[in-house]
Length: 353
Ligand code: PEP
Ligand code: MN
Image (tube, rainbow, N blue to C red; front, side, top):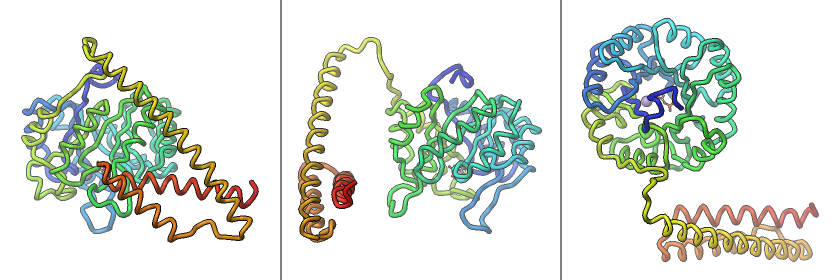
């Protein structure tokens, strides 16, 4: 990941959701520059909006404003591209870094079109995760870029759309970003707390978590007058608030050399490994009994799902879990997942698979 900042961590990308006016772009850029906490300036020029009629981006006329911001600050500039014509214009106007948005990553045709338009131009490209929690789609998009010969690549984790989610605009589902990192460890992973949270008050918490999970950088939206922003007003912060947020982050080391407590950590990890072993064997025993129940139900011509019994199991589990200090959300996901597998196992017995 030396293509940017010689591997300095975290890489800090900041700027408005959208370029709106020349003045707004220049003021945001210069005030961000003054914080000393920015490596790359960002601004949306073409905005994918959920409903028509919302501000759809200033378009090509904003590109010279970014050129000017780059000249004034000396910082590289990044723009979202969704199709080949955007790429062409960005190259023409000296944009340094491109990113592909979440609504584009979902569409392999669009990602391929962008990849094709970049053949022979090794410009840095960052690929946001798709809107839906689909790791393969995210990896596949990255493979399309790699196959086009691009070598300066990175991923952006911006969370996943999820019905019923109350806190976040896009549920983080950190595990998917971690799985991406496991599959492509050589690529930098940048976290975007702005689009995950959708709200200012949670930005710090998410940014700190990303740092604690050893992410390589952050992309955060900043605007000189956040409340008056033409897009994503609720999640933008002034350059000064942004600067403070970055200063407040605790950046921990992945593997500090002088870790005196290393033996303690090793011991705790051993304990975790042993507990994981136990969880595994308990789950296996539970599934074995589920199969026996499946066979009983088959012999007695009973349906697999007995909803009153399931409700009883669910409530008992949630009660016990919350009494033990586990969150209701977590414990519900665990028991639902176990129950799903249990049904699957019983179904196998029923159908004689
Ligand atoms: C953006 O970065 O302004 C944007 C549109 O993000 P996303 O693709 O993550 O929704
Ligand atoms: Mn935005």
